[in-house]
Length: 491
Image (tube, rainbow, N blue to C red; front, top):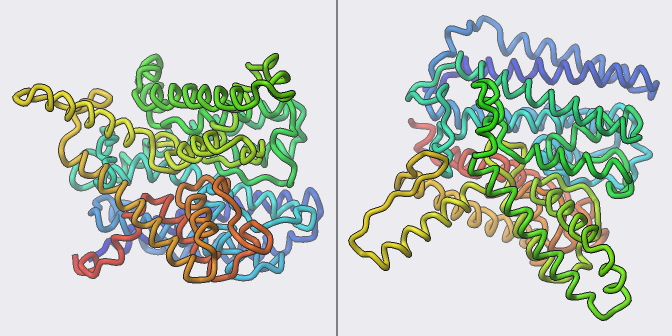
């Protein structure tokens, strides 16, 4: 039997959070007088009543002990509930259909960044604020889920990232709250620091807030169609905060609280991810430089090799962190550069960050496993263990990593087939799925529709399928797919 009171309690708290964000949106609407204040006020009243009903007659002491099945179901319901509730302003204020609203909000709360909006001038300021702040909510929500819940479900090798507050068979709700609060405080600190950096670099106050919401959440929603690189000096701090947001939040929180911040520099995920970015950016720079040697463009870049490297690194951080701002048209860089950037997009950032993808630690564990097997090929009787970040990687951990990678690509293949069946070409279906299951938001491998090239040109069914693909990618696939098993409901 599921812990229904815990599910109600969690959704009730989420409703209160959405209500608070809606109240902030109401203030923005009143300040800019865009005529939508009445809509938000009515919505706030409805949400408040809904939150009260969800939490009615529930005590905290009744939701302290949980099973894995409760966590699977609650995690999935959190995202679906958030999408369905937060998408309503799109349907009320604009002429968005259910499919359009579902796609846009799924892209928002999963911090994917894909969009169907082409005319930003027609969107009220308050709705642009709502669009950005719900993406910010999705970012902090996934950090909490990725640090506190997914490691306890034993999916994808995430058990390696269990903390002291989540190491028992039955989980302590009080310990969850302590670490979740610390993570949220750090997330708020990054957000305010990013707002200040953007504002000091010349961005307007509103745009500084909107861009910071989507930078720290590595979401990529922008309030305008202007390329991010066109914002000159603002470009620099944006890349820095994208990189910081792709690093494991729990490492910063636990080491700062433990008064040992220098240990952050020794974390294997942070070191490998940063070195990988620097090395792949070097390969892209080398490829671009050699491709232009002997031409007029080559002479131009011969005198600005450092700028060429910075441009490659900036785009790589943008894509690998799964932020997905429009910076540079990387499709003209050649097959090698596009292939490397596409691979980094699917890999994503670190576990416990706002970025999606396969995660760096899984690549690192596979690399260590290959090294181990090669050593055993030479020394058949030698017995060695794999150690990652000071923890022994057991066979179950490695199986979890391989299980997730296999499930990830199997899910992607099925999603490609579904989209192709709805009328997309195989190239468009692949581009759609690669973009959305990795939550990167950048269509690196080509257009996703025949009419416009973007997601706005897809049919309603295709948008809904893509919305679910984003959710599957964000929740590590198995978290949602396990709900399809009849045995799960009989547990």
